[in-house]
Amino acid sequence: MAKSLLLICRRSPWSGPGAREALDVALAGGAFDLPISLLFLDDGVFQLKPAQQPAAVQQKDLTANLQALPLFGVEALYVARADLDSRGLSAEHLSLPATPVEDAHLAALLDQHDLVITL
Amino acid sequence: MATLHLLSRSPFVDLSGASCLRLLGAGDGLLLTGDAVYALQADSRPFAVLSALPADRPLFALAEDLEARGIAAPDFVQAIDYAEFVELTLRFERVNSWL
Amino acid sequence: MSTLNVMGKEIALDKDGYLLELDDWSPAVAEALAAREQIALGEAHWEILELLRRFYAEFQLSPATRPLIRYTAQQLGPEKGNSLHLNQLFHGTPAKLAAKLAGLPKPTNCI
Image (cartoon, one colour):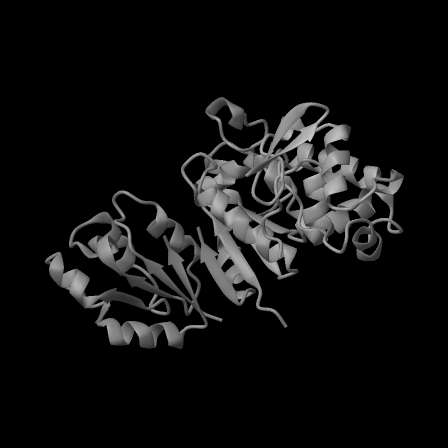
């Protein structure tokens, strides 16, 4: 049985390579059928904000890439509700369907996985 | 069950410490290294937060990083060396580094 | 790096034979790339190449094998979205070879 991995994505798509690196880990693991979950935390929730325009700063479209996660077999997507709330985002209007998790349940989410990587 | 969280950034410039506390469950440990040990600066706000942590969330700090910064380990923190650091990572089920 | 001559136009390729400029792609370019791989493109091939170009337009990346199979099954049905069908069409390496013929970048995350 392959070890399950929880990837915690804390970086906005625009803050440097962090967001992209986390996505690459997810896509690579998914392509090999590893059980991977993603938790969007802190500014990482901005990765799920709809209607971003990466071409304006000559970047690749991370949001478009994120949409491919389910096809890569990565379907367990979680987002910290408190970080959505504090950043004025709504769980109903995200570019990908992610399950909102209250702070009180975050520790339990980690406990459900063998490995945790924060990027 | 339990996770050892590794922090290395100053709580005064980085959210990782605050976010880590939101993920910290009963039995989870917290190890401060590098500038993260500034959280133990007496009379600071992070000091107050950490001193109020429940006892079932053990708190550690690298002794040499404390020493270098002239910070004394308060009684709610266990100062450890690198050998104990290694031992600690084995004692917990998983380790999560906050980069 | 090398080039491919298609109807008098020089098309730049990377060291693995993928198009350097995705905009250089045309059906004629696909035919020429396929000829280099000893493949005569039939209807079943074109269907996959068009599917891949749609995949790229939507997700901005080239799929690895499993996502390609999943996407094909989703769009064209399970009788085409399976590894046997795709392997037969593209010499056993559908993700890499079909991406090449469709003018997409080489898929990463792919052995």
